[in-house]
Length: 234
Length: 112
Image 1 (tube, one colour):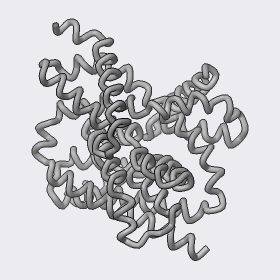
Image 2: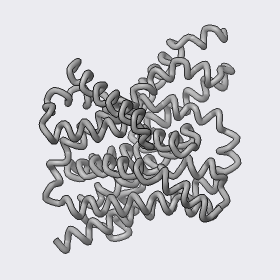
Image 3: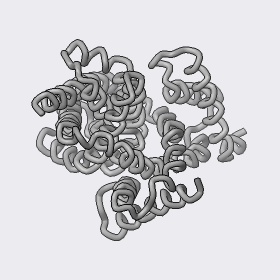
Image 4: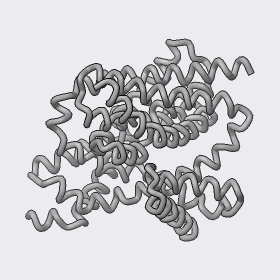
């Protein structure tokens, strides 16, 4: 069977099949924990473990799908251009908030992780935890961490922001709908943006744009920062 | 759609090329994202010609990172050994990031 699982069509087909099922579950039951990506990953891992299939065999096909992350990031530039016009009037508060939030994310996650004695390799893998998965993966390739750990942590952060973000911010006294959007996009990328869109179109726009800006900011800053902070504190 | 895909791949390869030539420590696709934004801003390309392809790619982006997520299984031991600090650091940092971002924007919006 090993030869069969090695065929690229196996990984591609399994991913499409499971993703299709996961999306079906999502339309039936609305819960952030049933996020299609999370369900799809869990089901595929189960299939691979049960049938004793190596990840490297699965990834012979999987990599054909991952390849499209590259053009998807370029496509985010188009989205960014489209949304940019809509926040022009509020540009300074928006950009300043994303800048501060993005830096706070990078600094806080690495400091807490270092303080809790996490190995360097893991710190390098989670420093980009707030930005959209494809950009986070690229950042981890540059910092020298493990991209798969990044993918897992980033998806978990998104689900956390999606599920609890709005209620946490409400308790903490945030009433501005645009500020809510910016916060969700900055801290919890695309999965947080999905929740922002449920709160309203304007909230969703701010969130989508915040995701793009923070992706760019973190990609530029994080690789240097993580090297520097590991030098000082470790 | 095909025209849009052509432009997206054009800016992607331009980004990768610039990274390669000038040894820029930023991913080529992120450089491509900046380039396509600039090209739209400078009206070198039209939004209508790239939007259909860009929307489709973004719509299916979640599917494209599933294989990376599955790759976590290879690092099960690393995650198992450090799950608690990873969870603590990311949860606290995410709450702080959400709050600081929202607070800064809310304050500045009001003062404006």
